[in-house]
Image (cartoon, rainbow, N blue to C red; front, side, top):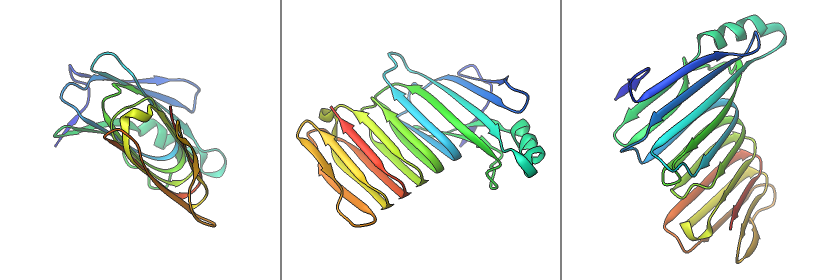
Amino acid sequence: MRVLRILALCLIVAVPVAAEERILDLSRSVEGVTSVVVAAGVGDVEITGGADNDMLTARVELSPKRGFWGSRSRRAVERAELQVTAKGDTLTLRISPRDGDHSFGEKWTLHLPARLRVSVDLGVGDVTVLDTSGDIKVGLGVGDVRIEGEHSDFGSIRASSGVGDTVLSTPDGREHGDGFVGHSLHQRGPGTSTIEVSIGVGDSMIRLR
């Protein structure tokens, strides 16, 4: 395992915005990479596929909490770094050091080649994955998931929510998951990539064109 910081293939820039917020930018080659993992705490993650080259760009906006714990939260934002870890053909992105108290929010925006498999592990917030053609896996504690892509790319499609709805829309029609409080669905499309969504509390919407 190697942690890549500012190298020839990886450029991370910290940009100050408002006095209490920070923006972390990343641009790097993903040649030889087949999977990208985003591990986040509280916030939103949006991933868009379709880059014509082997480049990944990411922007993470960090926002401290207000109120009583504000000063502690601001210090956590000042210390935070975007950590990029490569292991085999998998690239993992997370904010370091790990913020177990969730003292700041994270807003992730990624653009990457559509071919890559993507995995998102988020505690609280919303996840959006658009126009990728590889495997998609989302684990979310509380929040909503939206996935859009081409129907022809995907085979096994599974989605579940402990409390919330699951909806799949394809050229064949629209299906709601089975259940009373929680819902789950399992369908199969014509492709080979997979979609797997697991939510504790929240809704998932999968729209395949």
